[in-house]
Image (tube, rainbow, N blue to C red; front, side, top):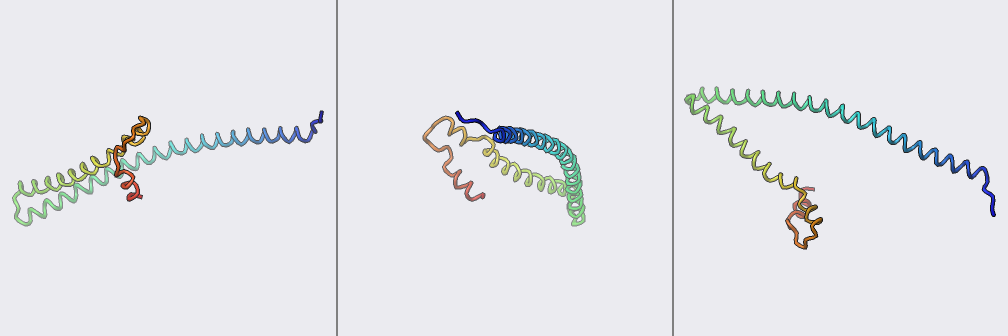
Length: 134
């Protein structure tokens, strides 16, 4: 039988100890970064709220300027108001169309397709669409 040298045992013990320390340090780093991410998300939420408020105020100001410009062009009060409402409806319809087209990306249909073991592709153009988006 061969004897195990004390240097090898201490080296293996040091290796195991350093591995455990590395895992512990990595876990601590992940915890600290998660705390930083939570703080950052809170700040971002407040900033997004402020941004939304300012953007809404700006949009309303633009609409008021357009409204008074239309009144200065001798449009009636009602026709100017309908024109402003029409602008908002056109923009709203465009946003709804974009949301409608993007919502299909949220259903993981290709993952579900792979999990159900079907032989047909649910959307053959998806690969082409992904290639053109990238």
